[in-house]
Length: 488
Image (cartoon, rainbow, N blue to C red; front, top):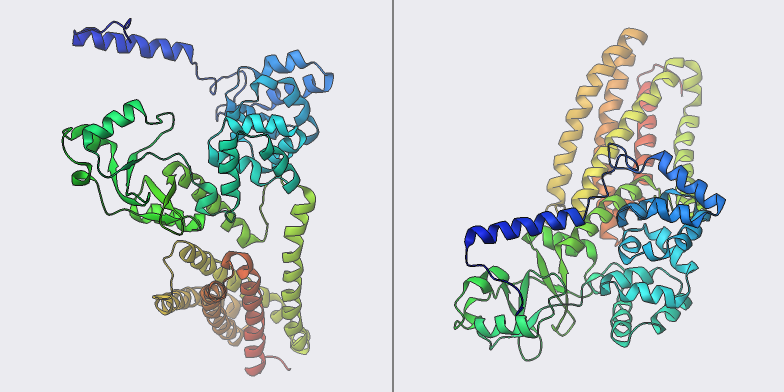
């Protein structure tokens, strides 16, 4: 600091800042946008990936290094995921010093897990020690227990204790995801004391948005935003300006609930407390962005029965997660087929029934899927709760009736023109009934699963499909028989 020149001329200071910024920009080019390696959508070109593959197959480590060295860490992670799984270890061995913690942090969970399993424990420990505690936990938590113990044994004692503490909490809870680096100060300080503490003793190596004020038992009693600290006179007591109303997150709270709290209360950061109310960490908005993205994708895939739906997921795991829902769908299809078989004589007598009945079931299924998707999302975001369940059910029923009436008029006119107006009336009534039932099933099935403590995104689609198909066939064929259009 003693040798640093300080200018009193505002104009000169602006020029110095501008020159420094330009110098930094020149020293740090944006490698993410490069026509030689990236296409117009900033994705790695197939030709570039092919060149890396060819160099790996030829065993030319120097060529591999030369190709990969200019990449941004995020692009290096993309490259690792794009090449064949059999070549990933070869690539890692060819670019050892380029396998930075930034690259590891950007890797897909499955890819990272496989690569960490291939590395010796001491190598993984070196990577983990360069990460934030929550990122280090994410690196280790998916590995087999023996691998976890071996890696943790290689960590520094402080990080070792933090990782063991995090792993003691259930997966996808605040305790696993929180950052253990928090800026906390006692409540008896003045603003001046706090600023001096931050300058001299505070750990400013990590980002933070507010300072947590704690009592003698280390329980949060308030927060003080950085802009308040910088704009308040030094002699003012911290307790006079701190915000006492704060949102505290229990350490065992599920990550989805944490994300909802951040969304509801527009939080940037929040204190995480243990069962006794002591401050143990914090959640920040950058963690929440990741959680929201992860949960949204997870719910979408669960609705389709595709499991994790990750293209890097091992084939055996992908098979296991998908096939059980296909078997369940097979069971529901048998129920629908049994209804068709019951009306077999009617279908044989009147071919129009065989032509038209898939339309009723298909439209009902689509209507049920629409309502189910809305309901699952509403449950996940706490918009659909016990307090408003029946209001939402009544709302969705009315929407379904309006949709059913509209579609019924269209299909009724078409069927009437082709097969006679009695058939048009029958299919129109069946369509209204099936879409109404589909609307009810689409909201009630997820609600019932949620009340039973099950994830409504997992199994709702199977049961909604069964109800809509079965009801569609039964309503249409039953009404046709009742109207005398065909014998039972």
